[in-house]
Length: 106
Image 1 (cartoon, helix red, strand yellow):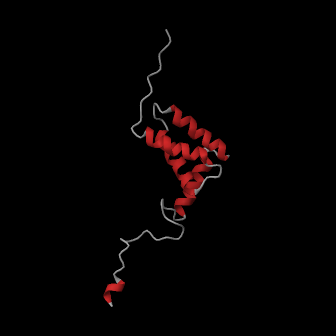
Image 2 (image 1 turned 135 degrees about the vertical axis):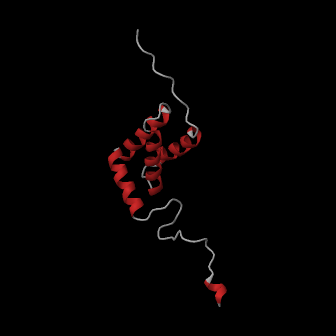
Image 3 (image 1 turned 90 degrees about the horizontal axis):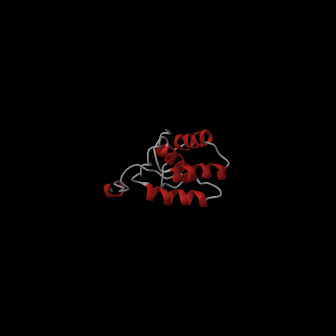
């Protein structure tokens, strides 16, 4: 008698990740943030026993961008090593609270 595969599990971030993946699918040319999102979601769902719709669409994203997972990892490692931080404009500093005490010391 053939063994029945276990039912797919539901991931608690499925709805949020669906929105992000839909944005990735709409990006013909990926930004740095798109590349990082794709890499983190591929990592999140690797080995997860469910969310096959998300996994399939992530593979579609890579095909759309002409990348494989190895190339995506290389590019995102280079981004992080080069100082990329989510939400920061190029060259922006992410240090401190934003309160400048130098002006108060005059």
